Length: 252
Length: 142
Image (cartoon, rainbow over all chains, first blue to last red; front, side):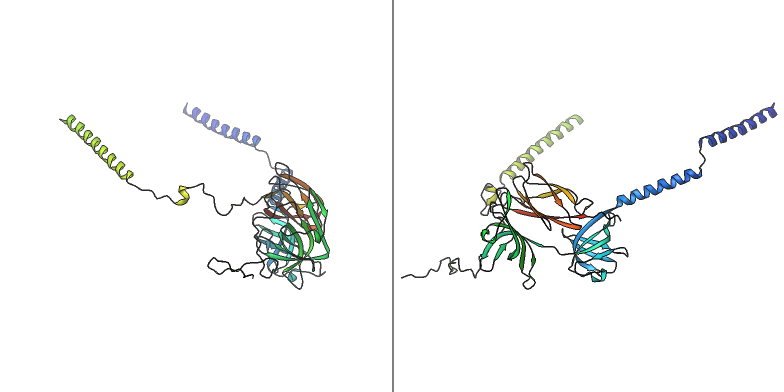
């Protein structure tokens, strides 16, 4: 009887193991070569998608603060520091030279860099680097006019800028909803004005205007405080004694 | 005996609290608060006029530094109503008026490569604000 029970137990255990193995083999698929390729492709697509999300095409403009053989550091138009990586595939172009390269990039130059921007490292791998000449924009109100030399002074929030009007200068006035051509004679003192131009080669403080936009219907920016020029004879300033009493000339 | 002790202690605590309350009230009533001139007359008019906040201008589309593959590009944004918007590109200038909600849209023709677009807003009170956005036109694939 004991022998019979022992045989029964052994056979039961063996059969159950065999049955389990058969069931596992039936449910687990065998990895074939085609499935391997499919898996690899899926991995590659996922990797590429992640890469595409991390990098994107971008174009930035800024002033060069530092340049080495592999990197250009820029200060962009918002005043942020930007890092541009340069490699053997980066193309350089300049309006003045056909053989422009990374060694010609100097501090103070304005450049436009187009390439792949990495969101994680916040660096741009440049594919094209162009040297740009951007105009200076002056926003303010007209302080004084020099009709003889076709020049005027614009007061801005920070300082005063001398503007020279040339033959090439295009002047427009925005009035009653239309932007129409205008001229130097239409410029009035205290009028809001926008000037686009480039610094004069001889007098860096003066701007040679390429475009002048007048806004006769708008009011002057209250943040602009016009200082009276000490050399301006058109305004009589009564000198003060310092004690609060004004000195006035005796007229007989 | 025990009960009496408990009642007496409660009465003692109550009397103590009453005396402490009276002392605190007297202390508070003797305090003198020195008000500054501004606190005494908060509606006093400042001698210098207070300026409104400078006008804002936001470009909603396209994004700054975006690379675009179409030369003619639609630009949308928002600013304060009743203001005047000036859009300056290298070769063109536009003056726009926003809707009553402050929204505006226009189209610009981009040049090859990087384009710096300048947006100037003149508020009804004369205050101005300028922003610059970089849009790049290229069909190059890299």
